[in-house]
Amino acid sequence: MEKRMTVIDNRISDLQKEFESLRTALLEKINQYDKNIVDVGTELKSMEMVFRKVLPTFTENVSELKRITSNIRSQKPKKKSLDEL
Image (cartoon, rainbow, N blue to C red; front, side, top):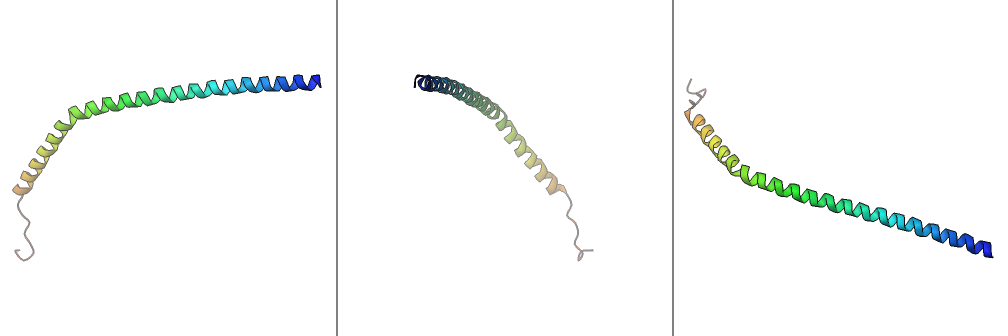
């Protein structure tokens, strides 16, 4: 009986060690995920600042391009239809 109790004690001790190891690994993984989320948030804020600076210029350039293409289209001579030939 004494021997069986010792074996059970050893198994319980081993389970406690494995549980603690698993708990530590899980906490490390959660901390790593948390750090990654903070990093992503920082990168998103940086991208927002870049877009805030670049977007007005981009919009102006698109408007200018639209104006230029409209002018070019209006200057092209119209093609004659078959009836006009």
